[in-house]
Every structure is written in C-alpha cells, then in structure tokens.
Length: 382
Image (cartoon, rainbow, N blue to C red; front, side, top):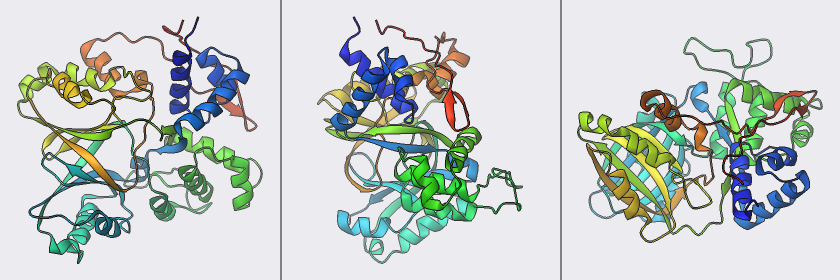
C-alpha cells in the first residue's frame, strides 16, 4: 500500500515541476484519482502556505546574475535603514544580513552587463547612509546551476524596454547581441504570473483587453522559447530554524576535480524534509568556488552537511547564517533532481546510470486545451 507521506511527496514534486499541472496529471504521478489529487492539492496549499511562482530565464533577455558581498569594518547599519537603501534599487532581487563567516551582507543582483553591475554597486556605495559605514565590497558573477531566485514584481516592470511592437520585430527575435525580445502580451503574462503563478489566464485576457485565448497562447509561447521555464511552488510554512549560506573556496584544482562527484552528489542527495536539501547553488568567481543556500531544520544539520561536503578534497568551507531578509525571498520546493544539471554531469562525466524520468508536462495544447497523457516512472512508490 502506498504511504500517505510518499503520495504527498509526489504531489509536492509534481507541483514544483509544473505548478499549473491539472489534477488529472498530478493524480497519475501520485497514483491516485483526479478527485483525490484535487483535494490533496488544496489541502497541501493550506498546510504549507504554498505560493505559486514563475521561474523565468532572463539570461535569454540579456540579464546576468551577480552576488555582492559586503563586510562592514566597524559597526553596520540597522536593518530598517538598510532596507530603505536597498529596496529602491530594482536590480536587487534578494538581500539578507549574515551572521558568522566573512561577510555581513549578501545581495543577489540582476544586471545586463559588467558596466551596469558596477553602476549599481557605485550607487549603493555612494548612498549617504552607507557612506557613514566603512566597508569592504566584493562583486562576483554568479553562475546559478541549482534552484532559482524569485524575481521582484517591481523588477519585472523594468522589462518594458524589452517589448517590441507588432511588425517591428518578431517575438523572441535575437538582436545582434543575441538577446531576445518580447511582445506586449508576453510581458503582460510574465508580469501577472510573477505576481501570482496560479493566475487564471482568461482573467488576464479580460484585464488587458486581449482576445479570448491570447493570454494562454502567449503563455505557451513563453514556455516554448525558454523564457518561462515553469510555474513552480514555494512552501512558506515549514519548521525551518534558519537558512545557511555555505561558501566553498576551491584551493587545489587537481584534488577538487578528483573528488568533485561527491560535491555534486551532496547537492542532489535525497532530503528527508518536504523540500530539497538546497534552495540555491551556483559558482562564484571571487573567491573561486561555490555558493549554496541551505534550509536548516535540525540543530546538527549544518555541521553534518559540512562534514559531508568535506569529502570532496581541495576545498575550504565556511558558513554563515541568514538572520534578516531585507529584500525579496527564497523558493522552498521539491524539485525533481533527475532534471538537475548535477545529474547531467554525473551521467556525462562519471558514468552514473540514469533511470526513467517522470514527465510533468502534457502534450502540446490544442485550441487552448492540453491533451495526451503523462509517461510516468513510479520508482519505489509502492
């Protein structure tokens, strides 16, 4: 008999991979009827405070990701003062205070060039409040390869300059800089779904005066282009003690590459909680290494994780605790790691055997409706 916990896990994974999946598809994945799946989905929304989020790939529109790390040399500003400084800078998607480790403040920033991130950093450093607090500033590119950072609604509004008018260019047409552009309808969909990933697309038609079905058509075009990767979920009500920032500095490339598989496996290692072990991971250039954000549930979880990570050689590991979120927020979900870049690397470089994948999308829509069935690998569900 399938355990209730395993069914719940399957539903949370299905919604993490496709937050707009109909109950019939979720039911197939979980091995229950459509009616039971619908009831369980609504129950889980209440139980975990689930939010539906748009996971977008704005790199195709010309944006790069950066991390700014700040170490105050004496005292640091109060959280409320920092929030007043950082919130108006729309390129900042996430900002948090750190305790322990080498830095006091961490910013996740979207910018279109190295020049623009330099201007963002300069504006912040010249702010009259921050000028009073001597600090060391470090800016590094962030090559995100696991998880994602939700984008602020205010930032989405800045995408208006990516809109092209009908006839002047085709949607998603690449410019000389290989950047894509979007139509007005696509911008409207990104804006509405970023605010509420479960928004009714017919309501979007009515709100913007589109012909019936145009919003849904634009939605599928965004998915097809890769700009909209998926609608996913975030579990907001979980007994998380804190989130830890783990900084891994590569000190010996030869030793590191000899045991890199253990680091990759630690990222995708199965979690005993309702969400993935990490909410975000990516490479950084200064210092050269990896930055990972990990939700901590138990008192020993962080120490146990650092010990496990230390099995990969040639690295120096430090951690800090996220104490106060100043801007934005994180996404806590149960992504299917079979679709992660780490699994791809384990397969291509280390010969790990890949099992069948669960399919979370139905066949392409016909006249605004989805058709077909899912191909499902139930694994050890029974």
